[in-house]
Image (tube, rainbow, N blue to C red; front, top):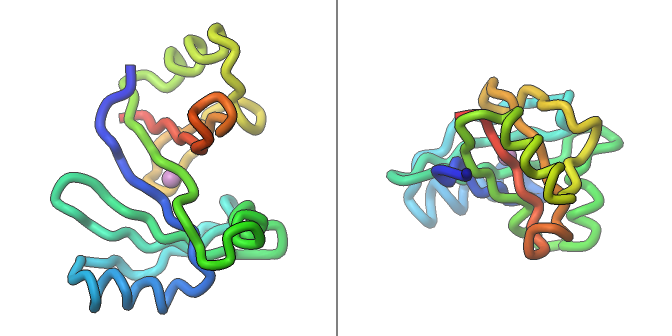
Length: 134
Ligand code: CO
């Protein structure tokens, strides 16, 4: 069911510093910051030949990233995102297996303008999983 790895998201406290690490130390192409208030993050995209890395900085008081950074003060991998051909079919299949879809369970528009859902880490080897409509 899952297809390409769309991105790996890394939570960071300081987006400027993280951008410098990826751009200057690792020599990657990094986008300009994009504030996404409805998701409580500011994001930059790191373009790699085979996938993307998203660096997420908390935005706003109730950012979902803030709690993660409380537990992981140095930052860390927050989620992985896999592409699926049909987000609704994927959701039905996962619910049928007993997996927990976070939030209302309805796909929301994600950082790339496409519908996404998030799956609870306890069902997926301790890793928050995002599925994005391909
Ligand atoms: Co993501």
